[in-house]
Length: 601
Image (cartoon, rainbow, N blue to C red):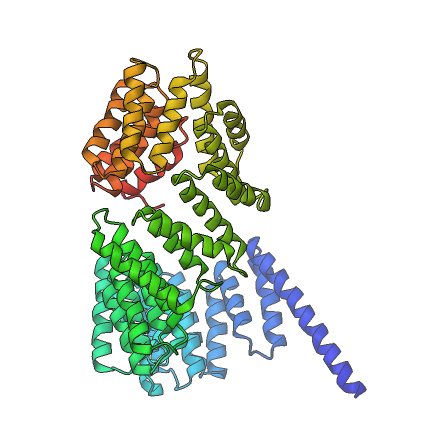
């Protein structure tokens, strides 16, 4: 036992000494002291009983760097005689000849290395790596190809061959060998996706990958890794419908639980391909049934996708809205309003208020959600904020401010608290308590949310500018009432109130602000031509007023998101961040301009 302990300690000490010597040799070599480096490396090679290839290679390289070519050649030949199986030595000798500018002799040695290669996986790998270190890619490729033949396994070195073809820029061959290496091997998928993502930069390359995968899927229908890769290619190319079809095929083939289809549907939904997402969720609901693990989630996300699909186009019909209302209600009838359905119930309440314009139904759903127990605090707080908004639309100011205050108190130091304080400040503004409202807006200028901060700055500046204009507050009070009427979707009343200001106070400094509110009303009424005219009026006739940058931004977004006029949107975004660089919209305008220009962000 004592002998064994001493032996272990001795071996550990020897390893430590060798490590120190190896470091010393490297330092000699890096400082140009090749003779000293050669001496230390030879010493280490001898200590390894002439078996450590690394030390010998470093020894020879030190001699070559010192231009001791004949000595190096002699030592290599000596090693070859004693160990002819070590075909790497032919590569070492060939490299020596290359260093002496004798390419014909070098090629001869490289050929001998490949031709004398034994049927030994380790030796073949070492030889391939030896060529790779010298950037002899063609010889390395030949090594692995011949190695595959003599080993009788074409898949054995496929990954190494793929890597070599990648280095040479041979896209087709790289894909071929990478796919071969992944045959029936799911563990390779993530690695291959990363490789393809990094090394296939063109549509032509993706099409080549798709073509090879399609052939393999056709000939090897049971090979799931190939199908998964093909699904990934379709996602990369934005063909979410094809990707979903493959996901469904694999799910059916494997008798899966639908998770693969759920993931594919979510990917499509995130890309705003809602029709594809709906198709995926319907598969779970219809084909898997209520007992499936993903049944509830699929139904939940199905409704969200349908809502987004209907409302994103701005041309939805009453019939499509009513159909979705029935589906929302059926979902809540099936599952109730509880912690699982809370988010969707909140979504449903907003949908009823903002699109269906049924405030009574919206407040009823949201009140049930607020009263339900065990609901996530953040969802409950957001439900309270929406409920307060819709109660305010119905004229219930007292209940609205009570709900805003509850959220403010519960989330004092968080974003939701800032939102609640801003909404309460707006209530004071609507009621004509301008000084108190301005004090609250001034506090909210430092809000953590840029959106809240920007809106608070705009409101504070607006109140300050207009309170100091004259002795009467009547125009401001009428203007605030018109904004409240707009918020309450009482569009005709809001227009009438704004017209009254124009009649009673002609050429009042609020003219541009009145036009701005009118533009917002036209937007709500989907009268985009009138909205465009109003925004342009402000931009052209009131370029120095505080509504100018707001109008540029709003018109640019309308061009981009609704009217599909990206060139005009781009010009306005550029104008905003160049001419109004201090605007709160400048940063986002620059970002949107770059996106429209096609920049990668």
